[in-house]
Image (cartoon, rainbow, N blue to C red):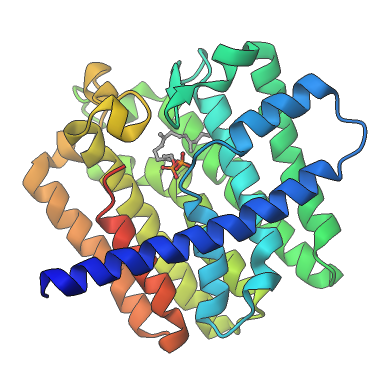
Length: 308
Ligand code: GRG
């Protein structure tokens, strides 16, 4: 591929993400503004994290997945907004002293550093419940609403993201470099749940919102699973190769705390090979979708090459 075509692809990817971000943020701002009776401090803390400079990857995947199966982007906006609420809740709680104890997120002090632990816990709780309120209120067809609520609650809950977080937080034998139990299966199990469940749900929920048939939903499911691992492997690689400023959070932390990651377990070369393998699986799924999947495809390829 020539340099010129790489540059065109990069520009396209950025324009697509800019557009999906604008639409999601405008929907989210309208939804939050319409909530009555929220105490000011809680609202401020929610808005601080919800409207911080995140990449808005999960909303983009949901909106573009809907488009990829010939659906309408507008129909997937509630799903996109609800996914970002859950993602922001997870980041606020993950940064707390009882979990990862981080001071920096998205290039700014973490929520609890500004508002204190109690408010940060409650802001996370509130974003979690707001996501479900949004899907119940903003999806007009009740049967569609229930389908989306099920997808999101399963992906977030004890057999999804929260389940992955407890494996990551409370089972040190699964994830410490020196542990016998540390192996690729246990690492992938944690990541399929902790990071992967929500990314998989983003692809599936886009399909559900677009009323995709079972065959297309299965393709989006396979795509979501591969993209979830691509995303995590790149995250592990960036932790080794990037600076705090580039990531907007503490770099090199995984190694500092002896955490099991793809590079630690497999070495850099094999980690790149695993990234390539998962990227190929994503490509295979994308190839089964029609030309409407081109924007989704550009974003997926850019995620595999991201540098922050
Ligand atoms: C606290 C229940 C609970 C769950 C936390 C997602 C998560 C589970 C923890 C985040 C820890 C982490 C850094 C995981 C690596 C992958 C990941 C989810 C990175 C952050 O997502 P991005 O890069 O963030 O999409 P932005 O800021 O761009 O939205």
